[in-house]
Length: 119
Image 1: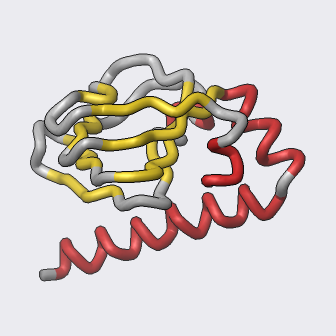
Image 2: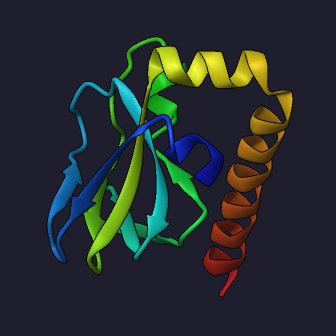
């Protein structure tokens, strides 16, 4: 992700700042460079913490309705790489390793969520 940071737009978010809201149109994804973000859904019934190196918000780029399904809020001051759909598609096409790492990151997060719901 940091390899793309030199070409992408980097935005700072302050603690507590909303990055996106459920139901909004999503035209970009995010890569967390520094800080921590909380994703929440179903009125905050479900949530997960996003750590540096993780990506989030990519679902809106690959679903037909391009909507956000949850809220993203900065838990700490954050430095975030923003990648629009065109940049995302270019990265996937030009760097298959990017796509593989993105899928691996999402799979790891899903496994962690599954473990959390067992307890």
